[in-house]
Image 1 (cartoon, rainbow, N blue to C red):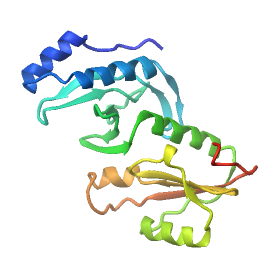
Image 2 (image 1 turned 180 degrees about the vertical axis):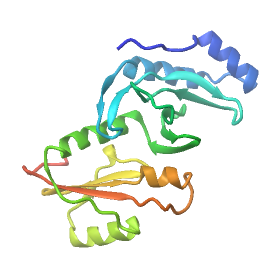
Image 3 (image 1 turned 90 degrees about the horizontal axis):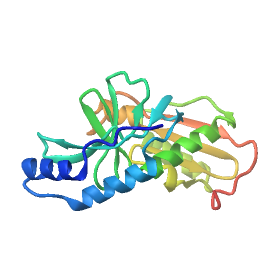
Length: 206
């Protein structure tokens, strides 16, 4: 899909000098790399439960005086409430209304998470659980299943995957983090989903 790449480099430099008082060339280099690699990518996201498009453009938060790449992950049919953007370090942030939280270290982590969700949906799903304390639940889970290991390449700051030869376990705490405004405890619980693998998988090679 063809997408708008936003202002050119000279316009970005002028905006940075006007708002920040300096020009961040590393941010422009990062944006160029991200646009070249991801812009126009479109598919149905299991994580977002919608058709999404990658269309990052340069923007400046005037209040925070911070550079961000807006529309990095957007619904193709936006509702005006959800957002997905990047910071110049590549961190993926998701927002709902006026609340934004960091979700993944990079777009590659988000894509790996989405790919695992698509894979998991072809496995044998067990009923979801909503433990009152996700950290306690994880500790007990790891005590019971000693071979579970964290899949770092598909995990983020509020979602994470664990796997062994027989199961996939997914902790989804994005809604909880958004409800809490990114800070402290949340009234919305982390959802834990488990799938029994139909075929054993070597996660060291995955």
